Image 1 (cartoon, rainbow, N blue to C red):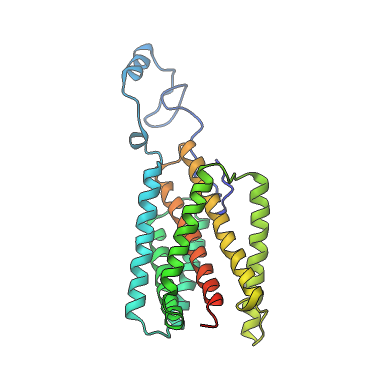
Image 2: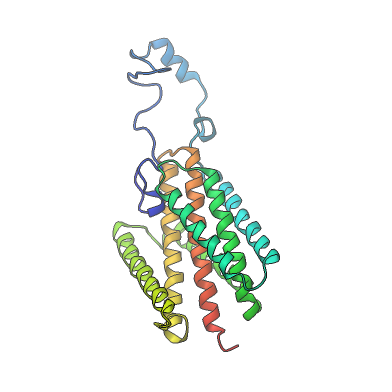
Length: 273
């Protein structure tokens, strides 16, 4: 099945066979070349029903467990960077961010998900976040806990809104959100290039910076809604259990986005402290 979430939309992701085990004609090792006999059908009928754990299908427990493990890796790597690196470690933080970006692209474009790559991404991203947060927290004490609490609040709010049906992930909702996200990313890239040449678009300060920061947090919340819908569709469609790692990656990616945007937004709001 296909998902509206870019992370989950790779061919082969969150999919399953369209046939039903034990019925019809099949071929290959361990399969049937002829219709099942009446005795075999009766044996299947009397056998206990196979749950998700028996069939190897993804469950919400798998998603929660793998997401928790991935976020734990982010926190652990962030703590290492926080305590091991000096305050001004921009080169090391930048290298970790670039490496995390490359690994994230590999995960997104791979047909099959690799748990080791997901944990590697989490470690690299966590290391980058730890180093960056230490710099911000030195300038604005307490900003780290504010960003963490804000990220948790956004996650909880979006989860409640999605589960209660206040937010519905429709095709139009997805198209509009992705169009805004594309424009936002392009704007930030232009701002980055301009800053390299000593110019500035004013996106990191003042009223415009606050508006851009709010849009960034809103886009992170939008990505979370796509994640929730993708996970729900995958479980309903009987996706393989291994795909829960792709769900964990997508959720972690969205939470990292929200955390970074909140960190930047809070820094703008506290710029005069």
